[in-house]
Length: 281
Image (cartoon, rainbow, N blue to C red; front, side, top):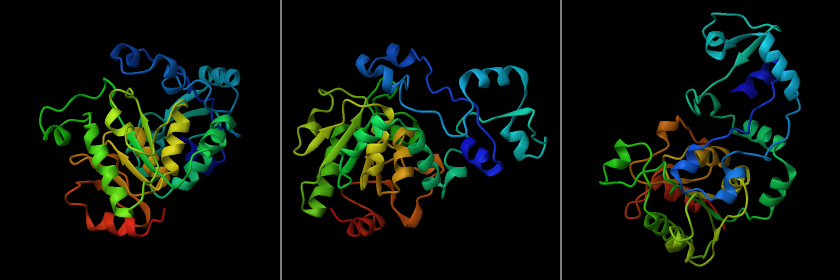
């Protein structure tokens, strides 16, 4: 939202604080310490944007100028001028303001991503299925099927990802490569990783993981994950979510009538099947 506003009004942006120390993931566990720097701290992932004010100058402006919120501007409560800082906070309306702008946002993201990560992503094929499995301790184990509709962060059984991948491979009668991005361990993911032509995407970082998922032709994901929601938004590919967890809570609207919803192996939707017929591997 900030990027789009700045471009629309030809304004510079302050230096972004990508690196934020977070001890929660370490306390909860479920994160590889070796990956903490690039997966959680987001250290060394991005370059400065073209219209971004350097950090020292940004800090000075933050301390001297008045601050107004995007909400105040949207509601015509204030006018913005050169002596004000406009603040964009939170995931307001989620993808609502960004639907239909995925190419624009994606281009900006690529422009600030360090070349080393873009080069890494380029080594992965587009003719693949992306799988995002959330198994960290910030996701809970379900006690009943109702939990997937009534609770936000629930671990999807690895067996569902296995069944979804088997379904897709049977549909195409091909051993399509699958890239697994996960905060889980090899042991937790064993049923999936033991399958032929399945690759655990490591080592890397948060942005390379996201871009690899974004380039896949089909995405299998935990419906509660905002991380893989961004991959679906950028890739606009058919997206299979565990029953009880669709993309509706993210205010996400796919383009070109692409399927993004709940997937049941025994009852795949007609819309999904129609999309799959139009994809070539």
